[in-house]
Length: 471
Image 1 (cartoon, one colour):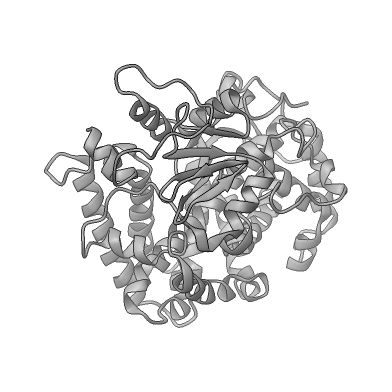
Image 2 (image 1 turned 90 degrees about the vertical axis):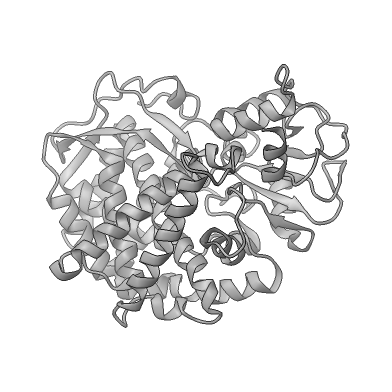
């Protein structure tokens, strides 16, 4: 297991010691036990390192192989110095010629240099807000269909419903697939199933911990599932209508198509659905904000135009504050190509540096009373892009940020016109960090809008770690 861990994450033994604090190494297994802890529960591991070390620490004391750097100054260094480092994705090893290798070698989130610039030129323009306006009517129709089908007064599984919504949006935008078209409904359902399963398997640490290509091992299952995802995505692309983004994604080289599809079909919907979950949970716990937001949206009329929604000040502030308190992109990592001094500590080439949007957003020096959900804080000057980075910053900022904001604003306008969310008494909200920060479980009771305000509940210790009690 030791050799497999080193091969999966570092490619060799840990780098020389550095003068850094760190949590104690696990008995018997040492730093490798800390690495397993990070993979099993990244959220707890990030908080453990920050509590132990402050804004700069190692996986263990003196560990120079994996370093944790929190705060805007470190974020800036890790986001702008692109020539000295590459993104580090904790994906399992990719066999030569496999679909996993094609994703790793071409996905925007991991490529470097000119290849990264080329992928941004392909993916960036189609996802700009003004280009997305042609999809507003389609997104609105999908949102209305989903909201109208919700049972008033019932308790719903919010992640399942919101994930289906954002998946339908991305399938419509990329492939031109309309789920209402019976002839293509089966294709859309099959792709939604594949995407859900692929995300689950890529977030499962056991595939990376034991990269053994033998029957019965999660690693083999993961390889086969990603191969099937690629075949299904390419088949769907070949039969797509001309109005989807697939035309833009099919730009040469041909082997880059898998990575581009994976980037849009996974990250393109994952960010939106997780953010919607957190926004509704936060509004349920903060009824005064909910009532004020509902009034703002009602004043825009029953069919608000897109420009009016985009400019609505409280709606914008609620989304920004939700993404601050509970950023779906909660952490990332870089592997150093050259030696780098970070916070006065010299790090060797090959070191992996982990940074965290979540920890930075919860630093009191960046945001006073940081665990409090307070949209009014956005009435003042905007924070620096290194202190607030829900979609990343610099050359590696997520090109899908506008898409996420568009679908979030449209869905909230439709949803809050009919329902107000309430957390059922006795429920616990459990944040789970894998590829993104999303709720492991989130049930919401649908109250008729403008009937009574939801009653905030004690949502459990893991919720309270991130969010101060509501009011």
